[in-house]
Each structure stands twice: as structure tokens, then as C-alpha cells.
Length: 61
Image 1 (cartoon, one colour):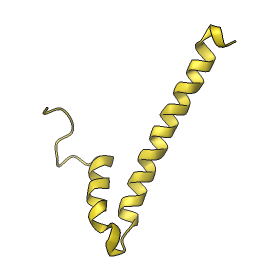
Image 2 (cartoon, one colour):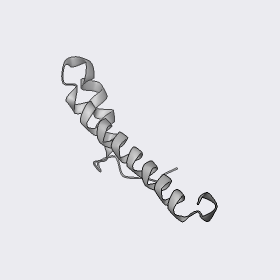
Image 3 (tube, one colour):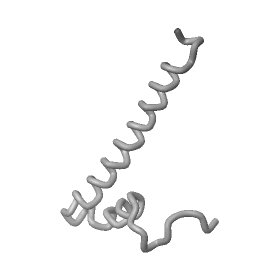
Image 4 (cartoon, helix red, strand yellow):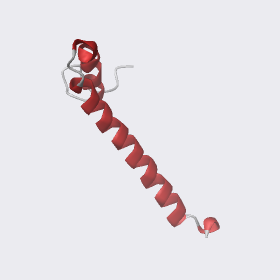
């Protein structure tokens, strides 16, 4: 599609992809920290959306 960050741009997805190569060589932290950050970000956005829905939806009150 051509949409997204260039391959040289650091991103969580790029860091996770690079970390997969090091997972079984004993350097697991290269994969775990970016993956945990992405998981925490997704969970935070989900919880924020739930809170906004509960706060702003008058039918739920």
C-alpha cells in the first residue's frame, strides 16, 4: 500500500520484528520490552475508550 513508516524509521513493530531473531539465542529482552510496551499501549487505549463510553453515554446512567 505504501502507507506507513519507512523501514529505517524505528517503531514498536520494527523493534518486535528484530527482537524475534534474538528470542531463542538468549537475548529475550530485545523482544519482550517492545512487545510489553505495545501491549500496555493497546490496553490503555482500550480502557480509555471504555471509560469515555461509560462517562459520555447517557443511556448507561
